[in-house]
Length: 242
Image (cartoon, rainbow, N blue to C red; front, side, top):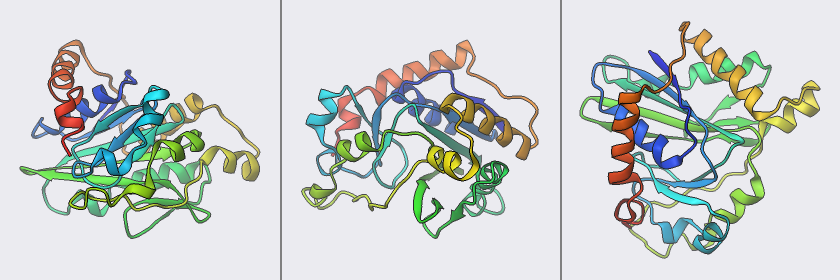
């Protein structure tokens, strides 16, 4: 499995990167990235149901639709995103994709648990939600990791009171959330900055997956991803299609 750490923080670029890697048959990837403040909605969701558009506009929060299903999530520089992209063969990746994430977190002595919706919980709060996309012999399972996200911005960006305005759309399922950083500070006496924690986490993921090299996007890949970004993930027709 190739591990790629994106050097970009544009949500439209990183979601385009996921689709680009998804299209590369015969190769398996773990993509890790951090986005600028943004709301990422599921493929079958309605922006009107899920997002406080006035608040997002006032605070320069981009609204981007992803390939996978599931609910709306808020991203910022305190949140690390992981995306496993794999060819379907033998046992489905969905049965085990969270294993390396759990193992890496437990190296920090963070006692996470996996619940039935394939999300991660810590002390009764969700710290990582996931979603999936399967098509043409490929599967992608990606998720968030709340380390030091602005939870007030998260709460105000999303619109749980209006999720029945467009009834055919998939509604998000609300859960209580918390960040990992306060847990580490209180329970372990450590308080690493997000960039430092993410760097350690990425290195641990590589160790767990027995990879000795972490890649970044090359110039050719960047051009192809930017083309997809321009033609799809920056288009209102895609992001607001429902």
